[in-house]
Length: 109
Length: 521
Image 1 (cartoon, rainbow over the protein chains, first blue to last red):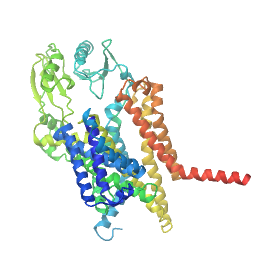
Image 2: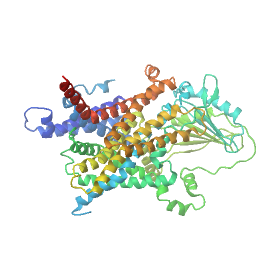
Image 3: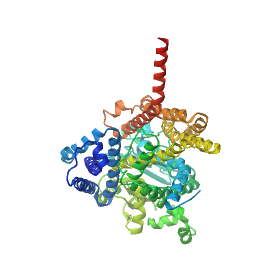
Image 4: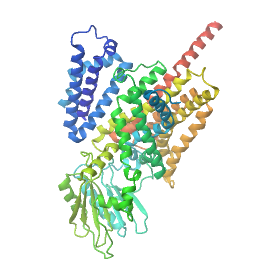
């Protein structure tokens, strides 16, 4: 169960980084002024995190079931992000910021 | 009607095919999402099982198995067929059933403390949702109907991608509380973010019925035996005949041990004994393997008299592996409960996509009523009422089915059919109610009823059984508590929706009262 939780957290964080690479959501979360290379950095970080989630799913479920679990985790993470962004944008941002700091704790159980 | 370029024609198709298929597709999606937890629902619906819980851990079943073996020899020595369902993570009970020579089925469960058999109430359980989802309780005709709807769903999904102009720009966009805009946003994100699941579930839903949808090859090759002969050959099931000579059946436990030596401990899912007591008796053991996508179980066959293994079968041929993996992907029997929850979330999103699409149809047109003909206005009003009966109605009917399971007398004859009757009757009653009431009242009343039935289900569970949340939560019995907690969560969600719908009118009433008070003062 902890691995699926980790995959969900990574999927959420990856999508959040990709969302922040878009002007609309960057402004929505009041992230301040733009900086150089911001879009590229966020996109790379986001894609990388989603790929990390793929690694976790394959580690937990194996090569055959892993990809199916990954797609499910991607969808669920993205749904969570969109709903949080719409109703509680501050929480959405805080959660996205906390995951890189604390998100690895399920792996330690 | 169809005018202009490719996108317009796709848009026209998306709108109208979506509308006429959406009502039933929504019901199929809701019941399909519930089917993800069919075993859990069946278990919840048989309270008699909850008190004689059987662990599926390693050492426990051996004693149970010996008990079952003995009881079957005593009570069903002359039966033509025995079946034992071993406890598993999704059904902690030991099922013992047999078929007498004249074809009467008996189905019992094992009470380990006293080594006796007991009966549980007859229920359709989670199987009802599965049957409705796959064939609308209408056999092959229903299966064909559902399959046609599934083809339509694939077409609607593809046309939806074509007409969506801002897939990436609006990827994370949802602006609630803005009427038609919000419905479109919600329709888009529940569609796009879960698109791989939607395409997969619709496609596999068709492919797994290939033997019935495209029967010609099987009919051409197996004229006499038909589909049964085809599957016997596919699953390498050798022909079996009765010898007529009596011979004692070998004990079952060593066979299970032998199978576990190959498959791992605790992996035998069920045991089927054909013609016990005959010299040609045969014992088949089936494997439970959640680590595999392939949905066809491995099987080991034993000679019933000598107890020696005679053959073992596993799906290895590439084409069969592929076909069986499609079934695995659709049924979500693999990957454990975590994966089933992902399916539940994705399925709910699919249902939300269909519901918001239907709502979008009327919401778009309610603004144009001034320009529309009287006939069109009447049609839009009818659509909105049908939306109520299909979207809110199926929710009321689905939760009413859970109530029916607990409120129908446990000893009722044909109880399973009565449960299904409750489901259809409640849904049917939602139709005249939706047609007679103004659309807004229809929404509020039916969704309110669904929310109330969901929120009160744990209470009903407490009144009709001992396996309520006050017992199951401290015992960490998530299998049972899961049903109650999910009902509570869904009920809260529906109640929240009703609260939102009525917010404006409550506000108006409040200001109206305040104004009155001022006038009086």
